[in-house]
Length: 252
Image 1 (cartoon, rainbow, N blue to C red):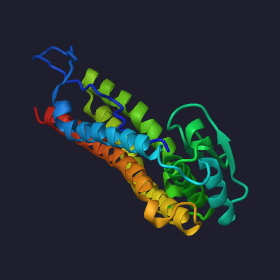
Image 2 (cartoon, helix red, strand yellow):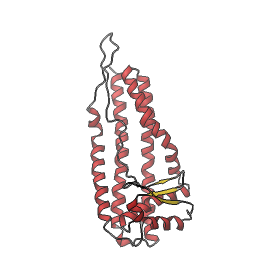
Image 3 (cartoon, rainbow, N blue to C red):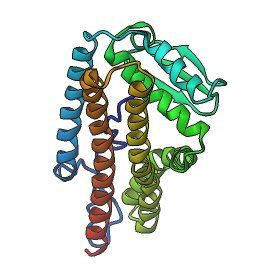
Image 4 (cartoon, rainbow, N blue to C red):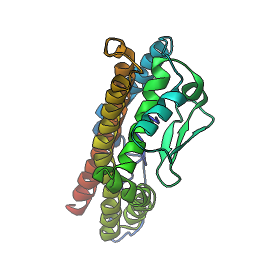
């Protein structure tokens, strides 16, 4: 489970200063950006602290099987026997690859017998079940990945170039493309929430974790959910900043 860290595609904003009859533009860092996104940044820092704190605590609570075994049991019980499970390096690098039909787990999650391990593995197995069962929002999210990548990269470049040369139409095109990143984050929220709900239900129904012992799993998955909320909020506030900044320039 890669927590949804609040990814800011651009932490700097620029404004142009022009004088009468002078087409030169001075680009400078705009501290107002941080005024806009401060709530999301603070939420992201708090959420990351919650994730690591909850993960550390739940890692000390034993589970009857490893994370890999829990994921395999969940997948097989749902008929998703074609989904492979692999171990990959890194901490909290867990994710499901819908193209390769592979669930990739970090070493600790793959091999540990802890509530943290089975909870995270079950969350990723939840994504595999979404894929296998044709969950509509996941299909939309997967289709939006390319749009989000273009928006977070090329869209911001167009915005900065437009500001730099004083061409507002180009800057607005960049903002429109950046909106694809916001769209991805908005769709991603219910996808992640649904995967966690599936994980919790499967862990209990399959007898992997008794309902009375689900506290550690709930804390880990709920903390991770806040990181996705923070990422979405930051994208929205960044888009609002770009739009208000450019609107102010156009009205000058």
